[in-house]
Image (cartoon, rainbow, N blue to C red):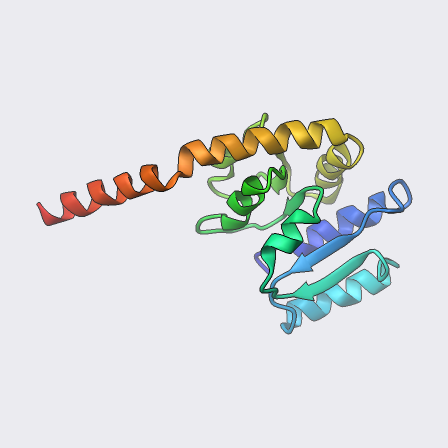
Length: 168
C-alpha cells in the first residue's frame, strides 16, 4: 500500500490513448491483498495488456536495462534504493512530492517530482514519455549526482565517522 501503485495505474490510464505503445511493469510483492486490488484496478481501467504485475525478480539489471525511466509513486521509503538503482542505469525517476527526503536525491536536473495526485503524476510521466532527450539528460545527470553522493568511499567515510563518534 505504501508503494502507492494505484497512483501510477490511475495516471497511466489517463495517458493510455496518448501513448499506446508504452507498457508498465510493477515489481515487488504480488501476492498481497493490495496487489490483488491493483490487478482489479488494472482490469477495470482496461490496462491488462499495458500494465503487468511482475512480482519479485532476481534480475533487476535486466529490468532496468529495458526501462525508459522509473516511476516511483511510493509514499514512504526509509531510503529509496530503487531511485539509486535507476540512477546507476542512467534512468530518470518520476516520484511524488509526499515522499520524505525525495528532494535530497531527485532535483529538477535529475528527475521529476510531482504532487501526489493522478493528474500531476500523469504530467510527470508524460514529460518523460514524450521526450527521449529529456530522459537521457536527466538520467545521466542522476547517475553522476548519485555517484558523487553515494560512492563507496563517501559512504564508508560517513560510517567511519559515525562509528568513531559512538566509540568516543
